[in-house]
Image (cartoon, rainbow over all chains, first blue to last red; front, top):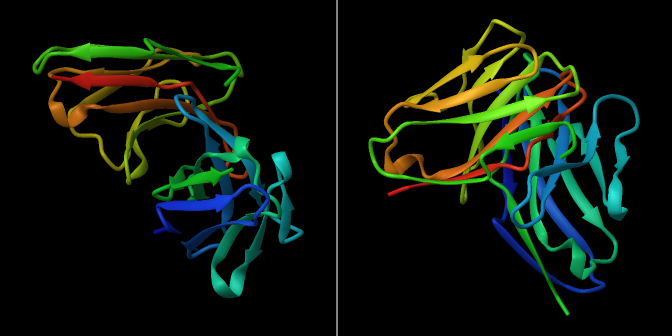
Length: 112
Length: 112
């Protein structure tokens, strides 16, 4: 069965610093992988996804993620954090039936 | 969260009361899902419906029932609410395994 582990329930960075949110997955088949963002009191928005093809995926708001099959990882990065990036981020993997399985979430804080 | 409408947005119930959470979509997708979100646990699947007329249990179905009324609407019912059901509930719709979901804005439920 697929599963997702997000390392670190809370990450704090300074404005302008690199953002790195870690996600590892387990899957018996080639996975579809997703990152979602949730701003306070809102639903989840799709940031980016990996399905097939290029392993470096670019998303909205300057975020990108790299699929590394050998490491079963799909870490999310952004070169320079902005105050507006403060939110909770969820990594997810799609199972064979198309259902999304989510990680526990990582709350990102951005300090001025 | 265009395309997925959840009602109500907030609700407080007393233990033992019943209520139905409503979800409607206007994107003509076959698959609809109900998740609950709890701190530190990410999103967990309660029930899903792969198409009109079908429903299946997810990871945490106990204490809930669902109805796929038609292609547009998928409701979640709590027959006898318990404090452990205090959570934020999200409805989502999906087109395909590699597409990801569109989420509603959520229902924040408190059971006292």
